[in-house]
Image 1 (tube, rainbow, N blue to C red):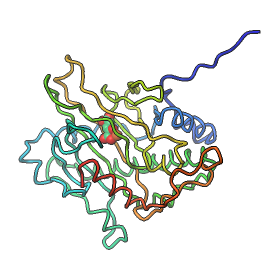
Image 2 (image 1 turned 180 degrees about the vertical axis):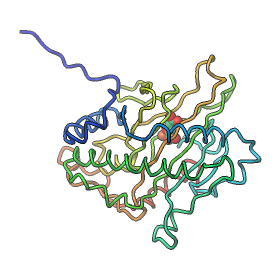
Image 3 (image 1 turned 120 degrees about the vertical axis):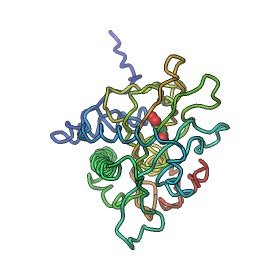
Length: 317
Ligand SMILES: O=C(O)CCC(=O)C(=O)O
Ligand SMILES: [Fe+2]
């Protein structure tokens, strides 16, 4: 008798979001399977306009190319998650060295007097470069749209109604982060981004084709994430891990410094941290609890309470 051993996948297979239209169940199984195995998935065709993305990269480069004195007036108030955060402020939870990065945050525009205004301050916009506001606002809306498509697949995978996440993320506290990792000197202490987990529901990331992003595989090895050019890297954050009682794992990841021959090259990336609405009660999904998998989180916490706890830990509050 011949034994057929089915080998566990050891790298992340890129998926096609176009599949979702004709085969939502099939796509749900693909992305859910990738999340269960790695906490990450790669979407080769995400459908966000390439011209819009190219524009956003150009404006991101132009913004960070300005002097510190030009950027500092846009500095984010502590915990504000809007505007500019200078080089060396953020530190991964429990790390001893700060990250080697600076970034810009774009949040959701809310109408005046909105009930979430306390936890979601207005955006800050720079005078230069021109068109920064309209282009980044358009990109934010696109991430929101694609994020909703991915959440409907996750809902199906979890045996929920495909629209289950629509209300929980309505006017959610999602943040688009434009990241600049400057060239790294040979003797720089720290790494571009220390090992961490994302706080939010899911993260949609562009720019990971410039090497450096690695996930901590359940085998205990660091696995390089090497997406096709222009692809979207998606990962599960702590809020989705908590909702699903760890069926979908929030996987530790980091951005390592480049090899000596690429140390002189900056790295840019754009994560969109898709968040729940601030007052959403994070309560373990009943379908994710069983005798074999008891509820790890019997206490309910609102999305905003959870976020505030976590921001303190990473030096942003
Ligand atoms: O720059 C990257 O590739 C990943 C960034 C990241 O993990 C984060 O900002 O949470
Ligand atoms: Fe991250």
